[in-house]
Image (cartoon, rainbow, N blue to C red; front, side, top):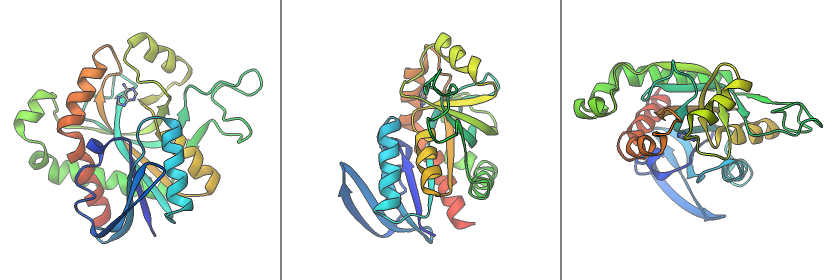
Amino acid sequence: MRLGIISALHEEQQGLVDAMEGASTLIHGMRDYTHGKLFGIDAVCVLSRIGKVAAATTATMLVEKFGVTHILFTGVAGAGDSGVQVGDIVVAESLVQYDMDASPLFPRFEVPLTGQSHFTSDSHLSNEVASAVHHFLDRDFDKAIDAAERQVFRLKRPRVHRGLIGSGDRFVSCRTHLSEINAGLPGLLAVEMEGAAVAQVCFELGVPFAVIRTISDNANEDAATDFMRFVKSVAARYAFHIVKRYCLT
Ligand code: ADE
């Protein structure tokens, strides 16, 4: 197994590259791919930057040029449902490109000529990642995120949700826009800008993948401020500890 780990931004993956043993970095297509042993697992870490094209390109390179056999995307997302709070973690069961609409030629959300609108994540990898998330919350959370930070973000006991994540090339920072997205996609748990693009590439190339997202904001008018604060402070520690727990178990 060689695991590709993608995040959009440095702040969502900070610490993992430093933890790699025997790390070597190759720059390709304006991205740094760092290969090494991560807590005993053969891994390649890379930042995709933001958006579906950036993420799809990065996932393709990981498979075709760096030989990864599995992909894990880790990062933050906006809440897509009022039952999902800042600090909660969403493990994707399926992902949809909510801005894909080739109707009336193809059904809404369907990626033309793939027959797919909802791309299903690998259940084995997602189960393993979900159990790493539970270990993180049970054993590391209180130490990793200090009391002052927990207070700033009003983090109580973060919950783990599993279900649908929507991706689109837009930072959702308006209640009305979120309601429009929700209207067509009941059960949507989180909105972000990369996961479903990685999911499509993995579907097409036959590569098992999982996506985990920590909720940084409520995809409303405060989203940009909340997102920046969350990403600048605690996001990297969520990702670091979850990936560490995943690799070590
Ligand atoms: N990632 C984190 N928060 C987001 C939001 N509100 N919209 C899109 N992507 C996000």
